[in-house]
Each structure stands twice: as structure tokens, then as C-alpha cells.
Length: 175
Image 1 (cartoon, rainbow, N blue to C red):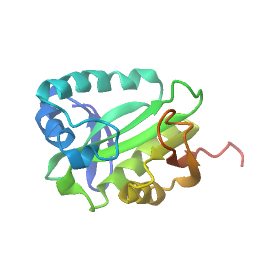
Image 2: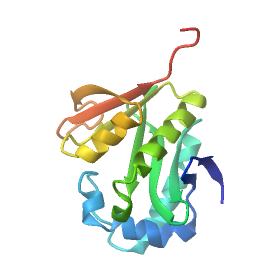
Image 3: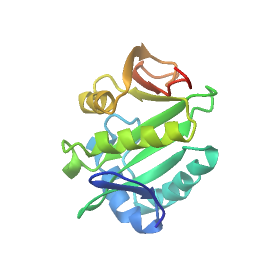
């Protein structure tokens, strides 16, 4: 198991095939998918294929990855990711998803803040979280993780309703 980051309560690491059942339980929950634009996973094979695809995100550049999140004593509880926007050079998306039993405990904020620090340390200058404006919990996670609101925009979600955009920009050296 490749551990990327540790926080006070969390281990953020590469996904493995052993994560498939817990990830399937999370991604088959319609409430988890409610604001993502994804359909709930139909069966375990979808998640097995997703894990293989998620493992490739790290190859997209320094600071990038799609990682499993474990809580001390609870095992897999969710995921956090950083990946470049293919259509917008120099900008990277950050996102997070957590199993419903672990909502409201600050895990998403803790994981997002750690991923932001990791990405900036690796040289990612701008991270963006386009969030469904109705997803109040995720808006709060972005804010508590230190991201700044930039208003509504469809720039990051073309063809979809505008998202509430939050961003974290690495300070310029010497400023």
C-alpha cells in the first residue's frame, strides 16, 4: 500500500483492488452520487475498472492522483483527487467523495486540505473545485479547506448548469 499523506486522523494512499468492495458500497449510494453527475455504480466490476483508471491519474503530472482515504480504525471512508483540466492548461481540479456514514465529521475538509498542500508543494499553482451550488456541505468543505469562492461559472462544466467555483492558488515566490 503506497501511502501518500497522513493527517491527524487520516491516511491518504493509492487505491488498491482490495478497496473495490468499500468503494462500490460508497459509489452505489444514490446520495453520494446526488451532486456528482455520476450514476450510482451498477455493480462491482464498474468500480474495479474505475480503480484501474484512477491509478493512471498520478501519471498526469506532479501532485496529481486519485487517492483512497482511510480513517484511523475505520478503513476506507472515501476518496480525494487532483487532476488537470484537459481543456484549461495550468488549472487542476480537486474533488472529494465520502461514504455517508462518515459525513459531518470533518474528514472531507481534512483530506481536501492535505491534498491542496500536497499539490501546491508539487508545483500545482491553481486548484479549482467546481461544486453544485446546491451541495451546501461540499461548499463548506471547500471554504474550510482554505479555498476562496470565485462565483458561479460553467467554464469547468461546459454544457451543464453553472457551478460554484472555489479556488486555491499557490503564492508566487517572493511575495
